[in-house]
Amino acid sequence: KIASMALAAVFGISAAAFAGCAKDGGPKDTLPDYTQEKTFLIGGWGDPPNNRANYQAAKDMGMDFIFYGGSQYGMGSDGYLQGLQLMEEVGLKAILQTGSGADNGQSSFDQNTDYSQYPAVLALNYWDEPNLSQMDALDDLADWHIEKYGDTGVNYYVNLFPYTERIGGSYEEYLDKYCAIMNKVGEATGQDTWLSVDIYPLLSSKYGSTVSTSWLTNLEEVALAAKEYDADYFHSFILATQHGSYRDVSETDFRYQIWVNLAFGANSISYFTYRRSSIESFGESLVDMNGNPVEPNYSGAQKVNAEIHAIDDVYLSFEWEGMYPVTGSETENLIDGVSPYFYNLKQPLTSLDKISSVQAEKDALIGQFHDAEGRKGYVVTNFADPYFGEESANKVELTFTNADTVVVCRGGTQETYRVSGNKLTLDLEAGEGAFLIPLNI
Image 1 (cartoon, rainbow, N blue to C red):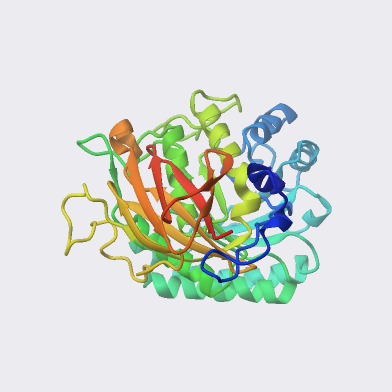
Image 2: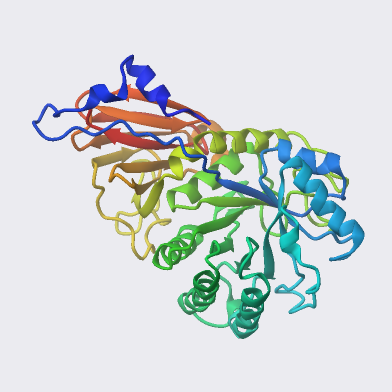
């Protein structure tokens, strides 16, 4: 964690010295203090063989939880429960897989064991990718969860489809129906509510890579639903394994996907997959089928996770308001002057409260946030496809409204800069993003 007192140290004076009036005669901003212990939860789909070393490797990679199937034992068995005890020992949480999913329908699961007695258990995953016709079953499972686990810390969790015809209706209806169930559980239990989706945007193409043009519109719908229904966790899966039409990925791609999600206010992500799948057509993951790290991606994910955890106290002190798209000056194939990736967004921000103008060479995303004291925060994400390396580097020039100081969180570090003329230029590498707090102090 980065201690907030480091901000005062940068100036060589105490936080109290900032009280008073700004140069324009208005009230000064106070120095932000984000010292509460907050955690941006990072997980992984696909649990390794059940032993302490494998769980320690997951923890060492910077993971906070794992989707736990325990398939070699069976839910509720002695071996399965031993795995939960081992995870507790290394400080790893578990979201338990009940087996209900898009490809196998509803399955029976162990409803006799009281999993609230195992501190490692974070939630029960009642369904992976349900469709609209299965919402009634989810509603019944919600009632069961309220009765069984309503007075415990075991959360109700479901992972939703991205855009697909398999939903069986409109995406808006799909989100509304699930969120009503999610909030019913939250209101009845006081537990954290989870809105989760998997969207894998990095596709193979004749050019080596392309980014799905539906990614941002899909992410926007989920982000707006998370805001409307006040979800405690907006969780998103990121691509970590080549499969189907999705391309192979690297450290830069992990960073890119996470920063795009941050621009939409996500506060938890998981890698799909963490362990290599038994499906032969899938590529390598972060660990092999025995749980051994696969390089360079294990170390790459470890580095990215450390960067996110280093700034989570700051980022999680802010609430998302919306996303402002910036069409790059070098972007081609514009539609009515707008990047094709932004053209179909439904509710993009059209202005920013503390930024009067933004110019970028490549497409960029600006997520606007506020903290409890009313300060504004901004995620600035380089949206250029990182596959093309140095060609995807981006220069973003921001002009602030009455700011002489900017706190910049990037690459796992936090720096405070004096700015002249309200202007700041960010040179963002492929896949890179930054979190900014403009201040007038």
